[in-house]
Image (cartoon, rainbow, N blue to C red; front, side, top):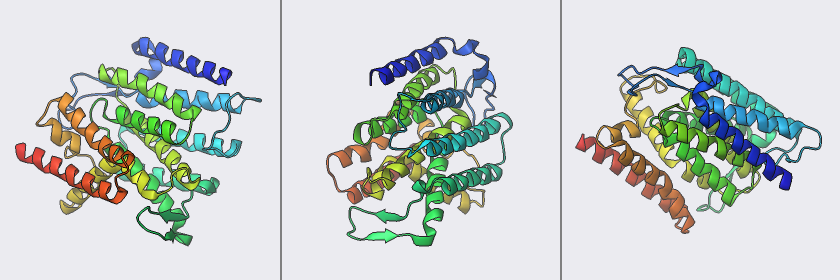
Length: 336
């Protein structure tokens, strides 16, 4: 326990060094995001280094775990060394995919196919990630998925990864959202060393992001969303999360925004995976200040979690959140 806490402090110091010397470290300046006045309205070229920062922390965590007699256990998320290695291997593939996309702007369909193959590969290696049944608090029975379980599991990964990726739009939005989720996992489900490291790295990133020194980039948004999906599915399959809708509560706003955007794009005969400026954060920031936009989004994200912790019925919580989300969108559009 003492040694693991000491290692955690070392991770904190390492990230502090990254924070204080960010502009001098060349690896953080490999991908630069330039404003185009179409979708990118930041004032000056900005490094897309959030993913690099998080990935460095992740790899160091893995290296400490695999040394003989490591003071860090594999935790509840990894049944053995192989399970951890599969997780790190697929995380690396997804990080590289995002890194390349940040650099040369891959076509949306190609990126989706590579992501799909990576998730399928992971599920073939780690059967503990396959969701075999769905349980709801408001339904007495259990939906057994049978042969469709692997397809449903892939679907869950892809929905959250794409929802999170689309949700990453303004400074602090994705960073604070991720920190909130990881704190909830830490508080309600598992005293995970990995989650603590991710929180440290995200706090470092969020400060730099707030100062307009870096963005998360696709390398960061894909990596973080994959990790969150992985942890939630493992927690559900291990019965730490009892009901499927408990996971839904965490991803309500990104999920609703994804569905709304997909419907609009399909109606307009556009590829649902292409980018535009119809996201929730775009709608809000067109009318309100950055601070007000961030507060509104954070309140929307927190609403279902707060209601759930006050023992409000999950189904009611979902309906209330849907109503308030669309009310905010319609109100903001009318104001515009």
